[in-house]
Amino acid sequence: MAKSAKFSLKLLIDEKKNKVVLAEADQDFVDVLISLLTLPMGKIARLLENHKTILGCHKNLSKSVADMVIDHFETEACKSMLLNPKSTKEIHCKRLKLNMGVTNATRFFMCPNFFTSGSCTKEYSNFSTSRCSCGAGMTREIQISEEDQVGEVIGNNADGVFVNCRSSFIVTDDLNVTLNSIGVIMKVLNDSGYLGFSDLRETLLDVGIEEVLNLLGCLFTSDTPLTCAFLKKHCMTKMNKMVSPPVPITGHVEPKSGFSVKVFVRKFDREILYAECREDFIDCLLTFLILPLELACSLSNDNTILVCVGNLCRSQCRRTLESNFCQYPDYYSCRNNSLFGYFSRAEPSYECLVPPNSYSGYSFARGIRRSLLSEGEKIVTVYPINPKDKAVSSPRYGAGFMKKNTKFIVSNDLNITPMNSSSTIGLLKKMKVDISDLEEHQIIISKAELISILRASLISSSALTNGLSSLLVKKPKEET
Image 1 (cartoon, rainbow, N blue to C red):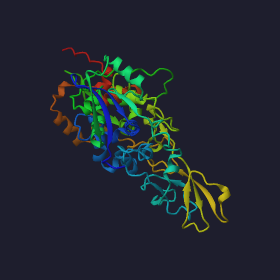
Image 2 (image 1 turned 30 degrees about the horizontal axis):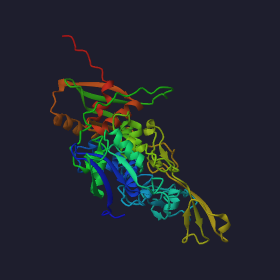
Image 3 (image 1 turned 135 degrees about the vertical axis):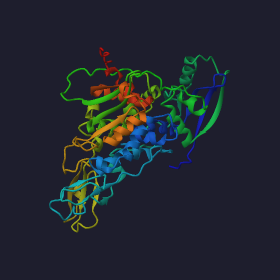
Image 4 (image 1 turned 135 degrees about the horizontal axis):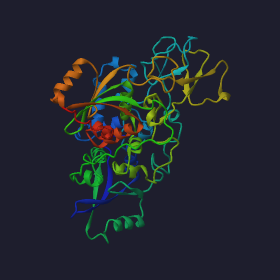
């Protein structure tokens, strides 16, 4: 994939209204368009770094991770995996004409004593900072083919990577994608109030990485992203849309299925200036960075925000893949972020073919045919290790990203700092607020509130205020 790759996009434009009515696109462009759904939110925030008003909360979360020293994280791998969030579809995206989610290839490591030590666990890690049960670092890199990593066919002669046929497509201004046909064009024109083409102009546009980046940014600010991105029309911002209050979770609720958080509210406008919390709530906030766009939309969507992303998710031209888009690598799962539900894709085990001379010639694959074994060769199964926990063979949903029993301060726009006297005093001075104008509230944040904060973070720079306002009961005035 070259960054100079271009697509030809045919736009049908209403010049009087300065509006894109529809676009005619080939399979390569639609493949890239749907691939945006696979990108982790932290990756999108980095791609949109120069778009100052978009995803400010996610940018702050990412910067907070970068600024915190390694001592605050459970392991070195925790910081690394949050700074460089991975997609389960990154290998698929490498097959695209334009890969927006380009990252360093996933790497695999094992203990250098794997073949010689009886106390060595038969495990692998995606991070070289993990440690084996024998005490050694898992520093020996091993090679596993992309086909074995994915475990499914990526594209074919008939289909694209993410779309199910090699056809041209009609894309509406709000990103409804359908196969191209005369009937579809007639319906779009009729639904838009056009009797024909007399008021419309056809234009051909070359679309490259910059144009796709602009389109990606417009998904968060406009319900007409094609017009916004390609006609440079000022977008109607979504930032002022009301975030609906959290919906209570019905049915059986497990005990302790929420986090106790102390919030400080400015009395006159009910804005949450900051919150004090433990690492459990921080683990959940940092999970925002690793959610694929489709999963973030699915969790938070109440049909009033990210409408175009929802339309793209429902495109009937998408291939039915073995593994769902709404997944992230299993090593991101932990006890705290399980409140969202379990959306991780289990990391596979691999078989290692060990030759008689175990110092060279070994290979790894999903499955090795026993009939091909030569004399003296053996097969050893290796399993994924949990890189977030220093303890070997820890539970799958055990340790979180941050060290236990640590307190943090979170600002309204999701800046996170470890709590100490200097950070607390500095924050109060920076806010320039009269102490008498602050109220303290102790609240419990459950799944509904987490999703409300997530929803607010996608379209607002006041994630805590917009996400938690329904929990704040105004305190009565004290009698004098």
